[in-house]
Length: 108
Image (cartoon, rainbow, N blue to C red; front, side, top):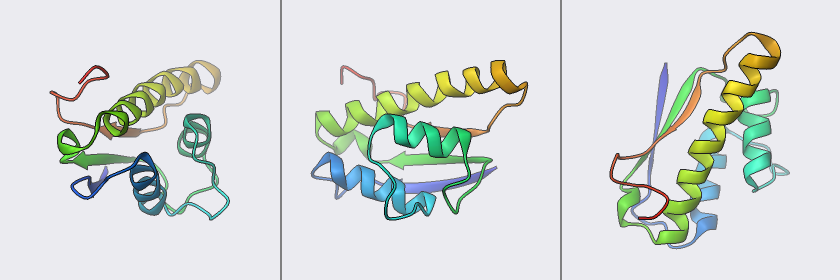
């Protein structure tokens, strides 16, 4: 399993987070920046240079502003649900995940 570390220390805006994830994935310039776009490219595939299995580990996210943390948590949770849906539809898991420190939650 590949672990790709993204350092959130310098993130000031949600776009900083999104651009870092897109860069880590090797996404094309036209990749969307919505949760749905990330779920589509990460779970259903065929778009990014980085292919499963992998974990995007977001380091130092606890120092980022609340909207960035909340988006990261939402993306993590949506990927978990999308993996379950993919298994239900295809019988195969897609091993991708967002790893956040345990103290980071949607309300933090």
